[in-house]
Length: 67
Image (cartoon, rainbow, N blue to C red; front, side, top):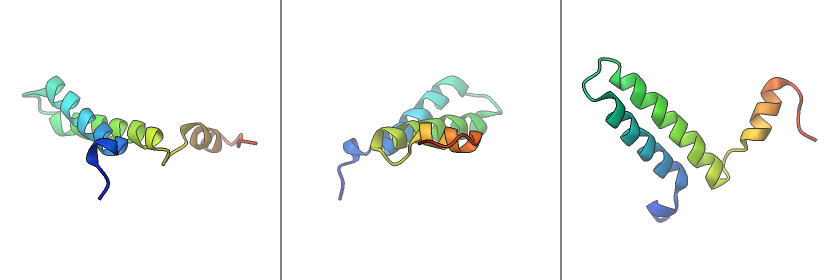
């Protein structure tokens, strides 16, 4: 089993959730903030793990493609 400390994607999600909870304690939109920050943390972690290439994804979505 891979060490959880080495999994940057999981760490990013956890950090995003913790930040969201610190921002939204008591708010009605809390679950939305948790999803937003969890997704952002997951994307950053996936980029750091090498599972996602944001530059390639953005260029593909914009229709320019990467050479």
